[in-house]
Image 1 (cartoon, helix red, strand yellow):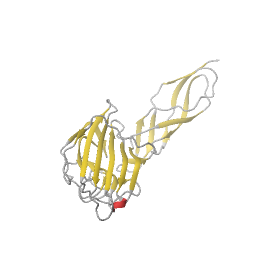
Image 2: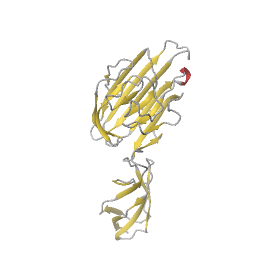
Image 3: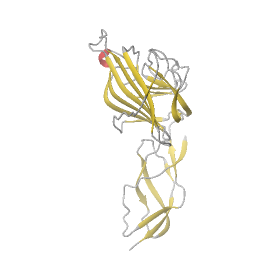
Image 4: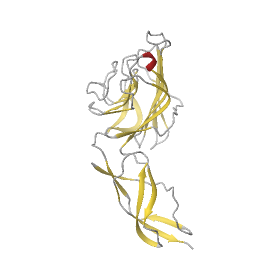
Length: 279
């Protein structure tokens, strides 16, 4: 499938031209991307840092093994091609956009067509906490607001499989406009307690999923960990070259551009630039 997207460009290089060079883009630049089939709409990035944020979060009232009521995202968010303005939380370590998903008391190796679906799994497991707190907050200004859902879940009654119980301190972040999903995990120690957990995304039908490597219904730990899921509509482009040699006047040039978000670049069109040459 080939899609086209408008984009802006970062210019980390200097034109080898003496004097003052002013560039005026006089045509709209479009980029064609060669993508995998439409259902494969995300790629994983670890290019970031653990940085949970909250100012004045709201407590979410939810019981163990029960899905919360509908909660407002605060903006329109696109997830696997569908747009949502509300979400639901399970104390078992995930959020979903489907009110019929249930609490997911039995974690799955995803994809799985059984409910829950349309979900973002932070550390989805069969959690039976002694204490937990889940909060949410929308931060920032349009069009770059972000939703932050904070999970603090602890089981400290010394289950037989581990000495001190398990602890989840982590946050899901949804970003407006870019539709990027971030998972910030301060602590998860399910491995030591033999709790298999899933971290990743699953679509509305349970037919496609993308999971963090090694974290699909498996034993794993995380500390100060950052994972981002980048939708194929997100482009982070950087121009690193051009041809032919620039001359004074108006000319067509071809820009060589790489996409820092990881989606493969297939074809470029030329840009008509006006170059003013100083002495």
